[in-house]
Length: 392
Ligand code: SF4
Image 1 (cartoon, rainbow, N blue to C red):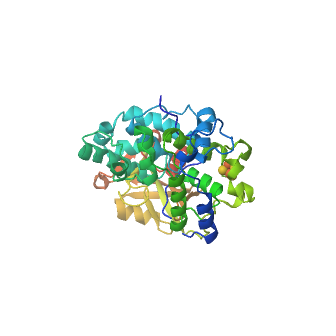
Image 2: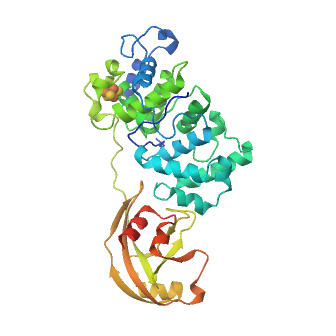
Image 3: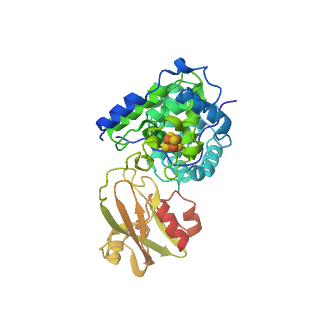
């Protein structure tokens, strides 16, 4: 039986990367253990002095790691890939129901490749980071076109697919085929930054290189599945972002951050920068108990999702509706604003109810739909728009 995979805890991300200090470079050099082969076979306990880092992680994972998540106990690369993509930047508890529903709708890569984009987005709706869904769909099509519908398990072939970075490719190859490849997701970055005492923001290129060097140097010659799962579990359940449980940690005895009292400062946070802020008005156009949805352009935020018509926050909404839809409307109540954060800016959404008096046939268009509120909630909507419609 294959090992379990993701434990609960922090969402993961593969990010581009900034700066590594001389101290951190020294820390990395001095902390890299001897090759796994040098110490293999010497330990009988995860905590026994002399056991390699990897041996301690493997033993701990087998005894105390998680074994009960929906994507565990499979070698199916499609299922593993799906869970890895869903778990990027998203919590395990959020992903679990989406994962099951998605698999029920698209049981294999061929079914996903053959599906329409709207259907894929519908099943992704609410998970956020919609580029992942577009990449998922594109990757499924590429697997059918390039690999005859057989999901690859080779790291290079995986990394050539849309939306699959180095760490994700390694995780899929490890769990599906037992490949010997290092992962470096957000949880693993935190464990290594602390254990090896690596300073600097992990998204910075030089820091990320140091972390990859550490990850590669620690990889054992065997038991890579259990080791990889162990690193995931360790980051998610023991070496957590706040309040890590060092007393329960199998690698505590040589942890640099613990020894030097620097756990709270490692990994270094992202350098602070003030995010730009944008405000838009969205129109809740209502006619005979139905609401107008518009499909967003494929490029840009919420690409391809259904949403409410958006106008400039200072626009005259009645004039906008006349110009855009040739419709006669009456402006109604302004609803409470919704704040939404993207990685690169903050968005304030000001919703306004609009009563439609006349709606000419020429205003109908392929990218516009009149739906009841309940039907609209079943469509692929951005999370803040879904929240708004639920509140109506
Ligand atoms: S000893 Fe504490 S800080 Fe160090 S790796 Fe373990 S849990 Fe993390």
